[in-house]
Image 1 (tube, rainbow, N blue to C red):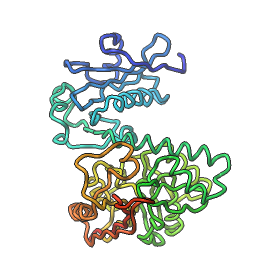
Image 2 (spheres, rainbow, N blue to C red; image 1 turned 30 degrees about the vertical axis):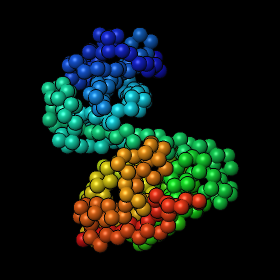
Image 3 (tube, rainbow, N blue to C red; image 1 turned 135 degrees about the vertical axis):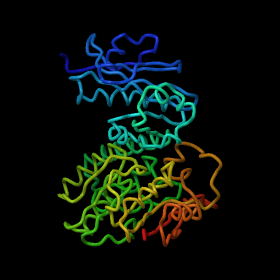
Image 4 (cartoon, rainbow, N blue to C red; image 1 turned 180 degrees about the vertical axis):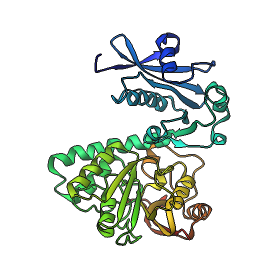
Length: 394
């Protein structure tokens, strides 16, 4: 058996007969219905070893038929097939991508899919053969928002550029790195007025404040850093909680997390763990964290209420939320202006009053939003400002 497989796009009309056999062999439902479909197949020589497809329902896509031939698991074929489908999803301009899974929710969560209730699924997708007739009610429905995927890929590219520069000289001049890396990357630290914080050691920052750890992590506490990036704040939190504490850094960008793990190993911080998952679906138990921190990341979420509910869920009674973020100083626009504006922390920001309302809805007490500064150089009327957001779980 050859070790490598080629992935290629295949029109539905040209899908080989082995595709049906592959789906049956993996316990997946056969293809049915009349929705427009596109497929990607993986072949090793003449053998079909993998399959993935998307069905289109207006502005919604349905990812289905992700299958890898027995004996070919663990070689990255499924990931390559799904990556090809995600590329097409972004190219299509569709609003979101849905799926049903009975055993791979962890895999899809690492790509940014979030579990959703069936009532959150668009009606057109609910009426599909997959949802209506073919998959069991016990299957988990998941959704990937296009802006989430665009943002993750944006920061993947940013981190890759930073790592490329940093590996050569280990970012010898930190002042230069905090000026160059985020600006050149087009990340949060831009003319939007986020304002970059300085980074200790040689670890770059994409944050928006000089003090992202104003929640005062204490020795022995458990800290969760939402959107940890390359780990700068997680490592500072680890220093403060000490070896009797624990720090979890959560991010969706595999490139960011690879850098974070490299720095963790270099620093010898065995009490720091990194998780690849969306902020909207934190893979930690209820009541397991003393402090949730974040630095200029929550504004990037397209479902901020869900993020705050997750933060509330994982906090112990008496636990604190202490995040730096960007807030709007003018009313929210009717529609986000661009994907670039979203990634630059402008279009996804909400007002301080909206933040306070969401905190209360999530169950937090003592909510506060302290606006620190805003506006880039030369902006007469800044649209956003940096803020410290605090709340507590009673």
